[in-house]
Length: 352
Image 1 (tube, helix red, strand yellow):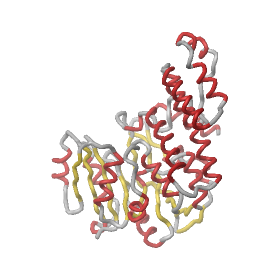
Image 2 (cartoon, helix red, strand yellow; image 1 turned 90 degrees about the vertical axis):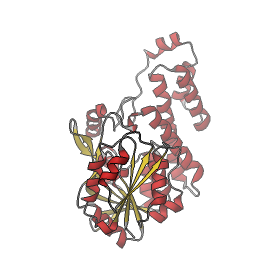
Image 3 (cartoon, one colour; image 1 turned 90 degrees about the horizontal axis):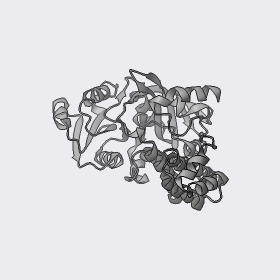
Image 4 (cartoon, helix red, strand yellow; image 1 turned 30 degrees about the horizontal axis):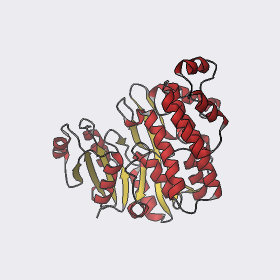
């Protein structure tokens, strides 16, 4: 039985698959320890023929009608036979020499349920930057931890609280114990853009995470990626926090406070996205939901009232309002993972 099953989900990415699979095979994991489970989420290109050409005893190919990333990952986890599960989207790559260290660490640290590493994010045209530079930030570096064999074993509650605020884990660089995933209930099928973060939140509520500050993965960004859908991302971030509040038992007082605060902030951002694109009816509905769920919020109440007015009135009033800026220094619209925002985000980090 293999020690590691890597779930490779793909949808019309046949041209990327050879590089992805080659990088897994060159990762340093022994062939007898490696199982690659390719989940084809309804591709209409020549994905199947590419797998037939590249296949071997280490690759299993499973086709499903298009159902989304989270459902595809769940199918891969159920089909996997390894002790540990990792993920790599078909347009991303692994670097050699790091995966064996993560396997050995999990073998000898039974108290750790999930371990993740760093990644390079970007593309050849715009260059690459470390994942933890903008996902983790300074707070991540200062998290309470216990050093062990080059890894950081995080204090569970502290990691969980920071994870509530933002996703710290790049899914293409995470190893998880398969039995924990099965017990946790896998990915939520309705969440695709934020499904990984929602799962990590559930796991962090009761399991210990560790981190290896070495580059395991290369996250290649290109225009067709799912994470360019800013509106959908913001909505799923709201749903993730709602779900965590409702479904995780025995959350502490501080965790609940952080979740409610973060949910309110994300709801405001989600509503402002509609306002910013001049969809005032939708903005009015979203601000109304924020007020119902989070209680009185003076700024949201003002926007809710303004967006109930005729469009010409709103147009006149909005010229007097400053644009909404998130607490990470970015004006509404651009996101840290969007190529056009990267330079802005780096400057915000430098100043902060």
